[in-house]
Length: 121
Image (tube, rainbow, N blue to C red; front, side, top):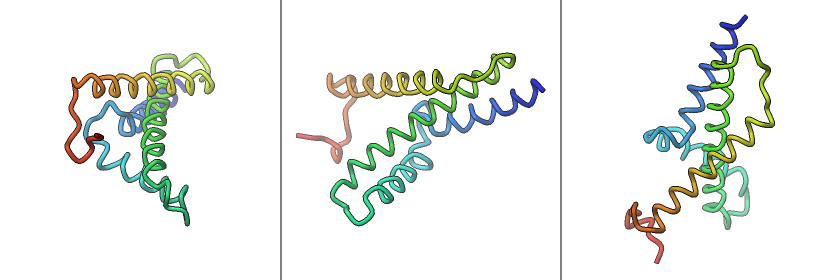
């Protein structure tokens, strides 16, 4: 039965990687369409907060990717232990938030430059 848990872990790890901020090419194919769909559903009939909802949807897709990677890694490496959903969620939230803060810091201190169409004056 351990091979089933490892196979499941490989699936979660792969899917999580596709949604996570660790793959540079995933945004155009996965995260932006998911964020746009999320914003469309959340702001149905009230388009005032559409772009804010898009940002929240984008962040949530990255968090979901990190949590899925955590679940997959746990299944692959620790086949004899049960999965702790609460711990996995907290680890995913913490790692995604740390990643977001690191990128925001790099932009704030002008180590990374934003494209002209995203620049805020």
